[in-house]
Length: 172
Image 1 (cartoon, rainbow, N blue to C red):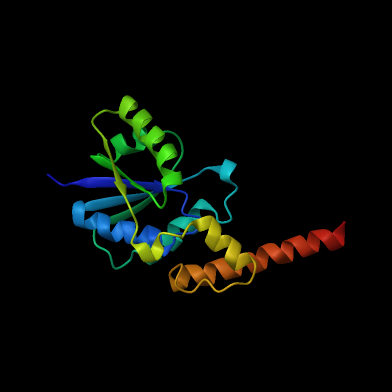
Image 2 (tube, one colour):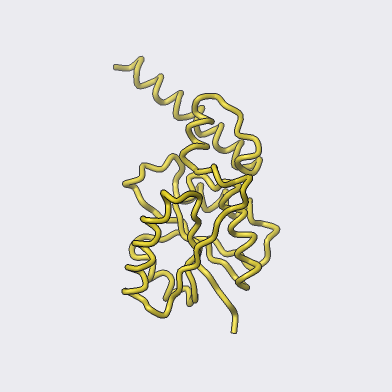
């Protein structure tokens, strides 16, 4: 039997912390489906298609990784993908309460699917997509936070967003 897990998130953008969990998750599971949530309420910087592309490039050398986008209930995707577990990352105690609540509701909806909590390597434990976006938007160096391809895409996107903001200001 193939051991398969789902690793969901918005990944806006994927960080080395996320990549660490994918790589270490592959030691536990034969396959990992990285599931990119289409959640407009979070107001993502990148489109779902952009995030799929960036994660596919970042995981290109990893055997057993599939990248998909999804809407709706996570457990529906988990059942459709025929996974046995959902991987969730915990960076700090503050993550635990929310993640525990989600794991319990997912267990109620689909008791056959387990939630596996993983802690990123210490050198990545402070990373979050929102911190990376903020540092980059303020002109800070994000080398070592995200893969080089994603760093380039993030800088390009932020230049485009700033240009759009400046055009809107001058046009009003």
